[in-house]
Amino acid sequence: MTEPGPVLCSRCGLARPSDEAPAVALAWASSRERGELRWLCPGCARQHVRDIEGKLPDEYW
Image (cartoon, rainbow, N blue to C red):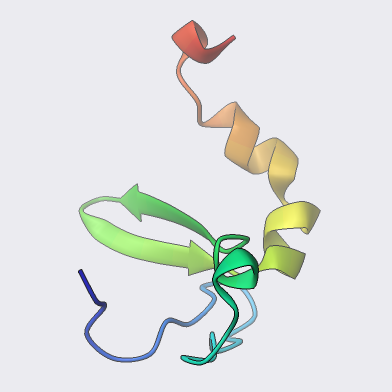
């Protein structure tokens, strides 16, 4: 399923290139907050990994 419009990082605004290699595209992190799909570029995902881990339910640990 394709996204409507460009994928943008919700932190820094970086746009994911449509011709990006699949392995690099997999480094983007997505989350659904209040029904809205949000994306983080690889740099912002690395920078905020603790925040991302903090949102996981206890059964993941």
